[in-house]
Amino acid sequence: MIALPWTCLALLSLGYGIALSFGHLGWLAGISFALLLIAGFAVRQQTLQFVRYLGHALFIVLALALATHWLPGFYNGRVIDPQRFTDDAVPFSMYLNLDKPLIGFWLLLVCPWIVGRRSLRPSACAAALALVLSAVLALGGAWLLGVIGWAPKWPEQAWLWLLNNLLLVTLVEEALFRGYIQGGLSRRLAHLPYGDHLALIIASLLFGLAHVGAGWQWVMLASLAGIGYGLAYRFGGLAAAIVSHFGLNLLHFGLFTYPMLAG
Image (cartoon, rainbow, N blue to C red; front, side, top):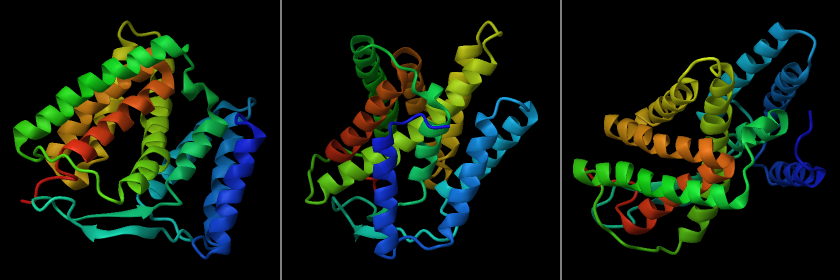
């Protein structure tokens, strides 16, 4: 079941151990850890196919619950209080989530095939081209729709935002939507003439729907951005998808209204 080096597992255990000692993790969170372990062993066993399917189904339910902060025992601390980075922006606040990252760790541990390793040069090229495409489609579309404007800035909380967005947001989302969903569908639809294209489109649409809480504009824009991330994953692996996604988020944060213009 173990696909990551023991050092990574040690750091994971240390991080959640510190969170527990400081009161940011309650004992009820053990239920989530136990269910994820059950799902992992079910998926990794090679004897009964229907048990693997049940394991994946359990993980999907847990992933939805963790991403929407439904499961008990996680006390996510707010590290940025509601504030406007620019006068015309809606207020933004940020929490250091302890539940959502478990999705990414589970995927990296249980489904190592999501990584899709590539050599450095093609991976870097895929990431760069996907970033340009995603920026044109998503940020250009957001500007045309009037939901963001030109607003270069680098507030004092920027470095905290950067680390949180890279490690606790982008990595988790790309492991789930590109590695697990797109990669898994590509494997399942490999017998179809356009199976890879269909997998990319489905993953992009699901990624867009995950942004439904922000409004229909962001569903459309996230779906368009997802096409770029999906191409990065297809031709450059998971690392390329993470780089293109994080690059777009960084461009949005540093150069445009963040998170969006006030209505």
